[in-house]
Image 1 (tube, one colour):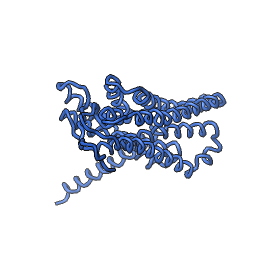
Image 2 (cartoon, one colour; image 1 turned 90 degrees about the vertical axis):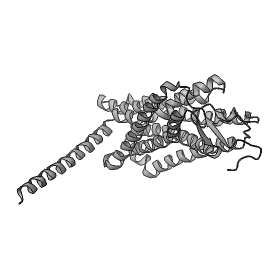
Image 3 (cartoon, rainbow, N blue to C red; image 1 turned 45 degrees about the horizontal axis):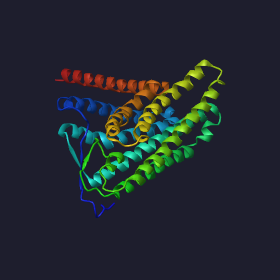
Image 4 (cartoon, one colour; image 1 turned 120 degrees about the vertical axis):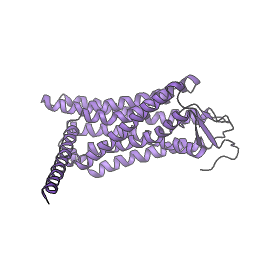
Length: 330
């Protein structure tokens, strides 16, 4: 992607978060701990789903994709933000900024599409339990996941290309802790009305469509829940749905708050605070919500823990036996 000929800005300054210098190190430590929890929890979720054979179902296939997305999504933003908290201002090249815009919107839009796919999966599981494995076949699951990734990539590519074509003549201070389209448009030396329309119409349409599909899935799910005769079966269905609804509410709430409003100085300051929620906190909460509210995940986690404890116990007794042998031998 070539830099426009009339652009004189070759790098940007990420202003970062509006935090007092005295609280920078504390904020850095808090976000670092949350980021490490995100990586650990999501990697554990992915590992458990791969290792435990009973979890090789469509629901956990999509959950594996979500865990992988959360790791990548957070890693696009958080490491650079952590460096910025220590140095107060962080430099980023024009090309690095465009890459960050691309991957941030690519992974974010893929995630909201995946939420709709996961809600459809729950609908099929509850409404058509006998035909579930036929409808959600491995090929169908792979196709749905692949479509989510492809649509997300091309949605992000539109914004990246349109932003990269704009001339940036200075100043080059991005009032954010990462490169995003809205704060970058304020720095452009040209008419950005088309770019703003693209954000409103394309991103707005994608977000609204996926949200409506998710809501419709749960409306139909609620209809079939009343048909489940046993209270245990109803609670089991509700437990998986409620976990998904918690995650969806967090993600869509912040996305709508950030991208459905016009850009002003005050709104950009609010966007920075909202971005902390969906780039730092939500990716760390997702695996915890799914694990704590999911019996199958808790069972698999307990099984893995007991297996590891048993292995360590055998190693301990083996070392103890070797020690006794060494002491007895002349």
